[in-house]
Length: 202
Image (cartoon, rainbow, N blue to C red; front, side, top):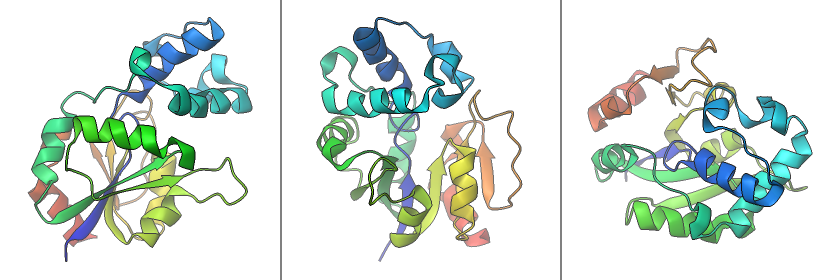
């Protein structure tokens, strides 16, 4: 039986930020530059300082999204995911969504990464029965997780699950205080051997 490798979707596999900003401009008639949110998480941006507003807009995006602002794959994501598939791991997506957004997420991943992911797991803090990302990773017995959000990485490593953090402008100023977190500057180095060595060292 293969081990499970879990991967975040947004801005790891799919370029969610660009698509969301197009939707936000359409809905609210306000333009926020992509560069602004490349250097800060959405909730840190002045435009999205009202948490409930940006979160509502963000989740609505996944319900109403269509080809006008459809998700596109991140640069090189299709290539390095191909290297990991059918190596030592099952690939599972663990990402923040409501259950009603599963269909859209599934269709976009199937379009860009056909026959790649063994399962998709959704977590959300917008319902009474919410579940967190680290709990999902623990429940599916993930042996490694890939993300770009250091806060989630720190939560996941509490369960002794190693995490690869993909370096980006919004997280590269944040320090890492866990030996279980590996910062990667170039995703092309995420090969089966690279992943295998991290898992074995954990």
